[in-house]
Amino acid sequence: MTTDGIAGLRLARLKSMPELYRKTYQRAIDGTSKAAALKAKCQDCCNWQRKEVEHCAAADCPLWPYRPYAKHPTTGKRRRKPPSGKADNRQTPPGG
Image 1 (cartoon, rainbow, N blue to C red):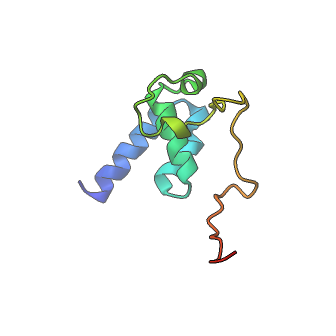
Image 2 (cartoon, rainbow, N blue to C red):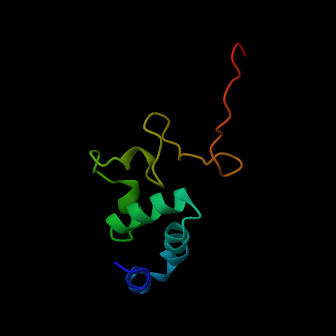
Image 3 (cartoon, rainbow, N blue to C red):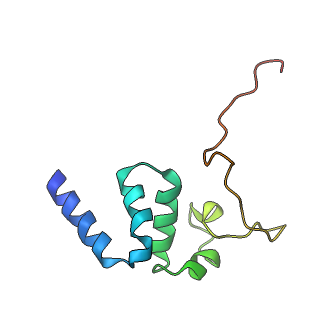
C-alpha cells in the first residue's frame, strides 16, 4: 500500500471515531506515544467505551494486563503512570 493510501485510511478512521478520542489516536499513529497507541487500540476494540475498556474480559489479549483505566487486581486502585510519564529504564550497575 502506498503512503498516500495509508494516510487516507488513517484520516477516514480518525473522522469516524468520537471527537473525544481523536487526539489520542493521532498521537498513536504519529508514533509519538506508545501509551497512546495502547490506549487507542483498547478504546477501538471496546467501541470507544471507557467503561468497556476498564471491565474488559478479553484476558487472552496480549494487551489486557496493560489496558488503560484498569484497577490493580489486588489493591483496587487505578494504575499510575511514572512521574515523568516514561518508564524508568535505568539499570543497576554490577555490584550495586
